[in-house]
Image (cartoon, rainbow, N blue to C red; front, side, top):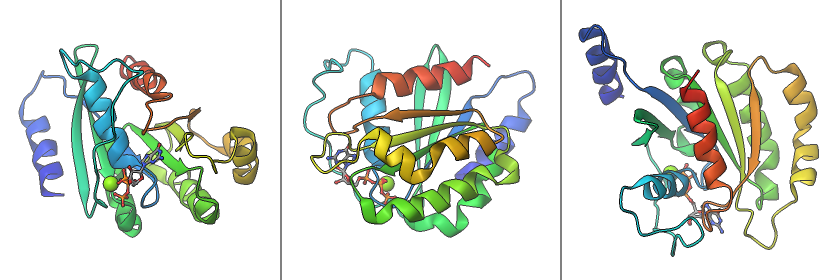
Length: 196
Ligand SMILES: Nc1nc2c(ncn2[C@@H]2O[C@H](COP(=O)(O)OP(=O)(O)OP(=O)(O)O)[C@@H](O)[C@H]2O)c(=O)[nH]1
Ligand SMILES: [Mg+2]
């Protein structure tokens, strides 16, 4: 939290300098936020030997207690991803005012978590500071054998109703932070919101 304040203060202290955007990474615990951040950073690393098809074994992650910041360089601009740990759900709203976009992640292999994720998503979308944020919803873990299809999970979420009543532009992607499936589209989405 302190580092967020420092960024905010520094931002105001240097007139004429364009600072980067902050994208919040939200979702229940264990959905794959930290792994996604590590994967995106890896793909963008200069001189990376990893093609998108061969990311290698996923690096290990621990549950995030607090927040986790990662800078991505996209089209020569900087975008900061700020993961808020799933266990911090009750205080997510205190971070809403400093960001321009949100990535909300769902674990589509975890049927027991669907209803609570849906309620969390609705409260994120109805939060006043986020009313015009760009929103990307990721259905993650598409590699798992027990994963629900996009059609199934969208209907469980009643996604058509959510999109129709939301004030934000919403994009939906099916991804796997483990295999890298769909991650190029995530980067394209991040680039598309930068140029706005
Ligand atoms: N099979 C599979 N496993 C995944 C995928 N994404 C993440 N995982 C695994 O899920 C577990 C939790 O991932 P994390 O990235 O730590 O989850 P998180 O959302 O950051 O969780 P919190 O920090 O507790 O909020 C790890 O063991 C990951 O390797 C995926 O796409 N497929
Ligand atoms: Mg985490």
